[in-house]
Image 1 (tube, rainbow, N blue to C red):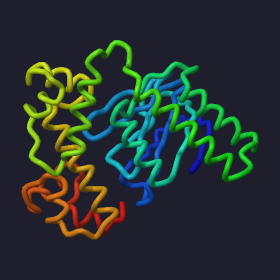
Image 2 (tube, one colour):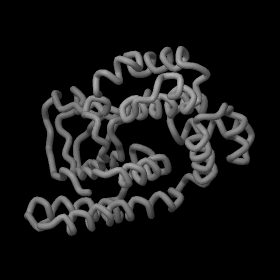
Image 3 (cartoon, rainbow, N blue to C red):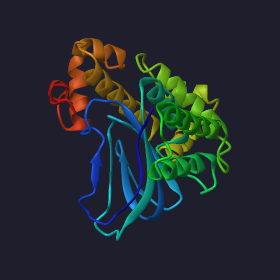
Length: 260
């Protein structure tokens, strides 16, 4: 379902959104930069958000975006989507395209997003059916982009194959060698390309995905820590607690109680 949408120009350094402090309800965001500059952190990776790039984020998640102190302004359009099925599809799209994607202004997802914003601002979205149809159109446009190899990245399908394998087997022991085998590459070549593609070495990326999944289970279930540890590929609850605290700044029990 379509959520909040809009066109914004921010100039205050107080503009800051942290993905683990936006409540328990799941939602997804496309935010396309028109001018100025923002800053995005996903996990441990930070990048500038420049004109012509779209943030593809889901919440709650370990992300943070803000207006840097040395940036004069940040102008963008944004579309939020809600719903469990939307969240599932969005995570799949995000895993293929990444959290920050370069799009031409006439690219299908951006054309749909800007049309949604224009329709909302002129009060043309007058029914739940219209809102749902527009949300579906945006998801399908992004899904089509996710199925199309990005130019200049001939090895991306192999890297994505390894990423998807890892996401589907987080509960199992995962090694860099096993992921390299999924990509049909040597470990050295795979590690180099994977790091360039995701911004993290494979082993660090696996840990980050496990922490994200643990955060989702802590937020959305009452499973005991030992079961969450098993589902996320941690050897035991104590190890889960150490890793989770190192990445999120709080132990799992505190995170669950906080309702973040």
